[in-house]
Length: 168
Image (tube, rainbow, N blue to C red; front, side, top):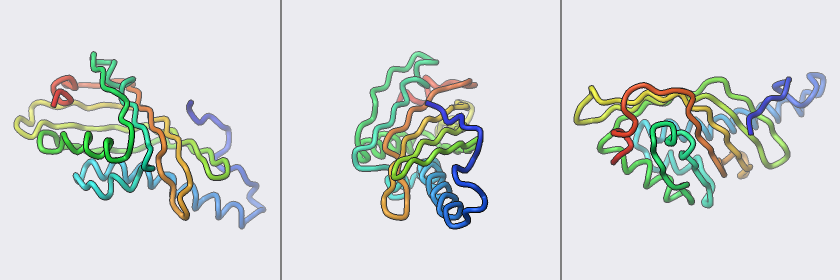
């Protein structure tokens, strides 16, 4: 599930053309995850939607299980965007992505990363949830960019009150 290869790049340094192509792919793959996080933070449905395939799946249930939540898998880009931005009037977020690892296999890729997500209740800034979540992401090539086809979000730790934040 997680990317654990011992090297960042698959191609040898001497093969400049392949290395450049792989670096471009890796930048676009990371950008899909960045669009996902920033789309939420800016409450921008177009940016958020641009991260996903039409048939994408988002599984937040492993993370939510840590505090007793049982959300269904979100299926389809429009459901993902509607569900996530449905919290936007109640909750402000900031997402930070670190420790990204990527494996490209032709027109598919796997990405793992740690994402720290701060959630603040708009009506009461004293109610918050800070989550540290490992992400496992499957992506597909879409022309010159990459799109998330499946994302599974687990949780390493949290502080605050995620049950209240996600209750809306």
